[in-house]
Amino acid sequence: MGHDPIDQLVREHRFVEGILDRAEAALSPTTAAPTPQALAAVRHHIGQLWVEFYHHSLHREEHLLFPLLGSLAPPGEGPVAVMEQEHRQMSAHFATVLTPSANAAQAGRAAAELCQVLRLHIHKEDSILFPMAQLTLSRGQLSSLAEQFARYDGALPTPPTPAAWHLADSRVQQ
Ligand SMILES: [Fe+2]
Image (cartoon, rainbow, N blue to C red):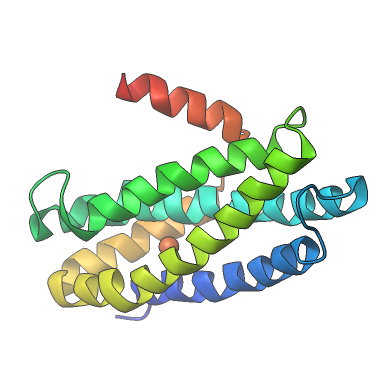
């Protein structure tokens, strides 16, 4: 097999951590409420994270990988359910940070929380979920997943704003 889709996800995590470093550096001099300049820098980096999160977490993982891991635990339980729940939590933070009308203190708090949750989330996927996926999935499933990733990556859609995505998502769940 030429291309391992789980390795692709792991490489994407390293790329995301690079953006996370820059977002945290922009946040670090701020205390309660970021200055307008600091908030603009934070929003710039969090905006880049949203694009990665949309393609990587909401599409490659949730739409393509996670359904293959359904046998690991009963519905709503186990590592996949935890990852999905954290994705929802992070989407809400993205929406708060990237909604222009959010006040600086709220946006700063949400950005700091988002960075913290995302770092731990990446660690859990790398150390628990992905090794489980590599043990569980057959060669055939992995190569079909690699093809689906390649097809998706060949025509990346423009992500909606996190607020629009979050609203649409909570409607689905009602
Ligand atoms: Fe991930």
